[in-house]
Image 1 (cartoon, rainbow, N blue to C red):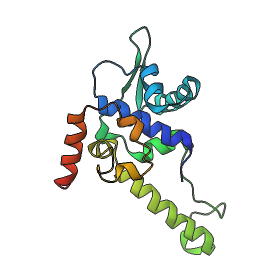
Image 2 (cartoon, rainbow, N blue to C red; image 1 turned 30 degrees about the vertical axis):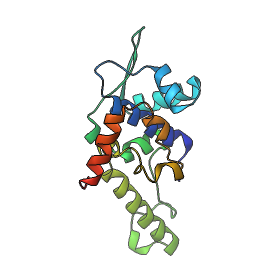
Image 3 (cartoon, helix red, strand yellow; image 1 turned 45 degrees about the vertical axis):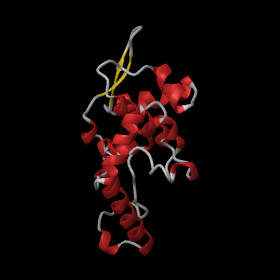
Length: 167
């Protein structure tokens, strides 16, 4: 549904949020855990920095930190930073949804549902359950698996326990 750039941006922001360090997460650390080239990661991090989702820190101890708390970064923010605004205008020059063609009306409804859902999901909600349940993990190709590989077993267990308690 979304581009590799958007998925990788979600992985990078999740990794940074999960590590919740005061010091920046380095470019090298991100490439190791997300398994992408440094040039591709640079492109993505530039998009996220321009969208004011990240702070870039220069120098030997440089890297990236979140610019906002995880509960204020939505999936919609990330998608739009990477792919631009989600549009649904297929009949040009009108805002009157009641009088447009059926296809335009359908696409308007799809866009409204999609943006509403993406706006509801925050980075904070993602990091509360970054992985599927243990019993399912070996059988699914979870895009967050490599991002969460560096978590301590205790942190993984806490995430799993939070899920069992209804989060």
